[in-house]
Image (cartoon, rainbow, N blue to C red):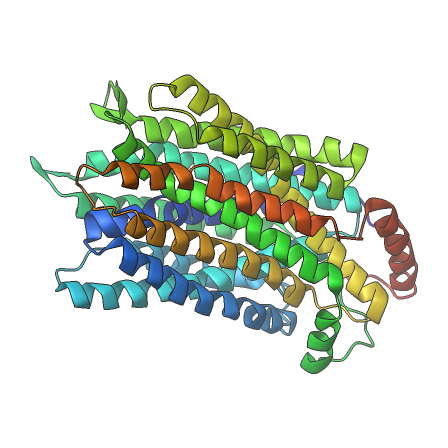
Length: 468
């Protein structure tokens, strides 16, 4: 067994998801709102764009995994992409939140192109980053710990964005007394882009790749794909991951609309120094991310006690029940709305480190079964499930808004308000329930993985371990 990872390296690994999650949260919470209320295109058009571009992007994930598996540098297979893609990642993020002075049809084309390129770069960073977890250590508890560090930093990055995005946009939109929200969104994204690039560089310098494919393994894409096609736990976790992200994506994407159009007033209080209002939506989202961190911290001790599978299923079933109850809250029941956001978000936070730790287990299971290791290809499925869940959730959010008659920057009908309430409660609950049903069929429990890990350790120790 390999030595335990040091705190510095675990934190360094977490830096990468701090950076990614800043952008992920901007896209999942604010991008639909930006396109409809600032950029100036309809919710239905945006919903379709999300579906088309994200399906294309999801298909890129396995390609990126295959490419990363075949990358060989002095730094390893996966770390170099954090170095190479950090600056393009920041640049395309800024372009995505830039509003050009064009006709509506030209704006739609611009949105398709910039968002598609942003997602390609996001994939080129995130698939290798996710795969890195599978080659830093073979220690099962260290893997769960790494995943927990990853998501503590991920939610910290999300909190930074959710706590500062709206105040920053409000502050930077003030152009010598003229309010220009297009400028505010672009400059806010520029700040986040610089921070993200710095954190990606940090992950590159602080982490190491230790687990190498078997030396006798030859590069063979057909064999890799054939092995993956027979990997039943991979398919089960893929399905569970997709519906977990649908659950989160619909809730995140509808939050701004919920507080802007269902509540009479968004403003909670003023920030004294900047004279900028802090909204209920900001407080709600920040509370959710803080609760996510609590969930991440709880994931390891609970899963150590009862196993990853039972922990995952329990968290998603509880989230289903709480989300259904959420639908019955009225605008005047603000305390209950915030309490249930806190509880639901703890459930969501528990699940995420388990998902990524389980993908590392699946990579080990595949090597144990076949004698071949394709870490990047398997971990690309985690990114693909994330993208597909996000795709379906984002598209459904736009389409449901259009179906219920939503009109941007207008007083909404009761029908439209009902649709927004459903997107905060019953619809995401369905995603959580289906995710828990998938996990019933997942067979890689902790006892089975301990057996696999011991056998793989014996195989690997027959050859000297090289550390990059």
